[in-house]
Amino acid sequence: MVATNRIAMADISRQKRLEVSLDGPLTPRHTVGQAIEFYLEQTRTHQGDLLWSAYDRGVKLDNKSELADISVAEESDWTIMPQVSAGC
Image (tube, rainbow, N blue to C red; front, top):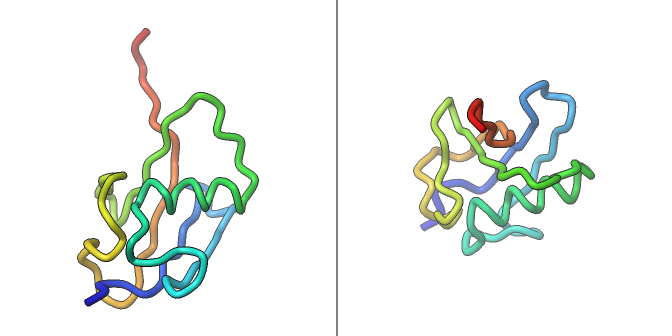
């Protein structure tokens, strides 16, 4: 059983948005990391050498988790943002 069937992804400013259904280019077998890569490609976001993460309701999602394993209702709204470090 698939826990979600739609993912809405956006950057922190909500200017770059993408909504995908899991019966299209992304499937429940894809990982969170693959969904992030798809979002970055589709929104033409420059990745640089940064690592990117997805957050759902303030909780960081594991990039290796399959989309089928994400325990949400019918839809999911993610914030996509780069990981940053204050240290050297």
